Length: 466
Ligand code: GAP
Image (cartoon, rainbow, N blue to C red; front, top):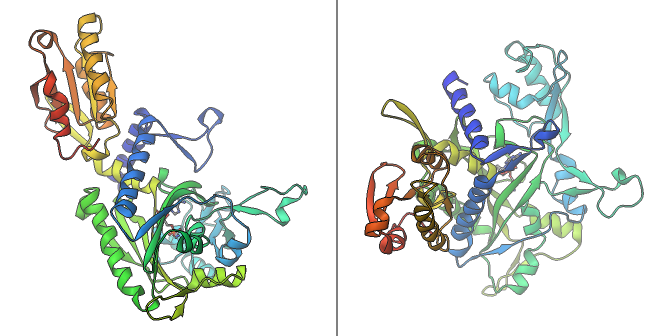
């Protein structure tokens, strides 16, 4: 990581905390590794992203429906899915400082290809063959323990009152899509869908990640937005290509992420059931890394659930009467990673009149607050009451904020750091001519608008979305 990139990451983390986007978990108790809390603007951003994803994946599509399944499920589901047996990362420990580390990440940082799917023996060999290139990122130590695969599923005692629940645990879900597979038949029988169709879901997932890394990029509790599309076997790869294109367009056209900050990465080492897998990578401050996965999963998931549940999960084609297990193509993204990509994309430093201006240039429809309303002076009741009147009207249409703290310059700076597209100021002129000053976040240009035309002006901005 170059110093400049590290700098940008630090600046984003600092702004995220200072401006109520993201807080470290349990801070007053000394923190809790790899979990983060979203503050008032972060929560707003999460809700906006979820609703934009839902709109794009469900509302815009006649062939995709939504689902909200439980976090807890029958433990056998995780045996069927392969998570109990094989959902693991390669763990090693620095012998000097005892820090636990992911061996594949250490190799990756040293420029040696490795990934978490490699067998224990294989990764041990690569690791110790390349030991001269590897050092502990914490203490610089060069000695490490043998690599062991560590299962990532988080265990729980839900409904188990035996005292020793570890023998028969249930699990917090490691991915949301298993809830989709086990409800595939319910949806098929009750929601008037026909193959090909998709089921979309947003929800929490939990993984015992070995290393806390890169802020909200890799956390132990995170939210996924996943869509599983059920196809005829012979159509799987065509649907896969269509889904790749559709998801790429989501970032470029729908979220307006710069093309040069995104790229495709093909998986070289596929999980045994996958036919093809690509990541959409984003240019985070620490380099291009996985933002979203788009995978062709074949009939593995439904076949496994058919085998383990004993229930028939095949589909009878109404046209041909042919019976088959649908094949699945999926799109899967963590919202935390999407938030980090957007914070990175929006973070802008500018010099204005010799001073630094930090401004979050979110696309207007993604900005947590759309309009801020200020009375010019806090101690002039006539200005305050006029500004309140305008705020009370606008808040019924947009997420708005009323601010009468400090001078106007400070209020602008605060709204710039939150990314608010418009600031409306009520000054003395406003009391005489029934107009206000509207300041644009990006150009910083101000114009006067009649109070009676303000709502219409904002609503007519095609980029803002209520
Ligand atoms: N259902 C497929 C699946 O879960 P994955 O590659 O393990 O595949 C999909 O995860 C996406 O979930 C990733 O591309 C990433 O956006 C997000 N994700 C995975 N692990 C994460 C973690 N520990 N923290 C934050 N996001 C994570």
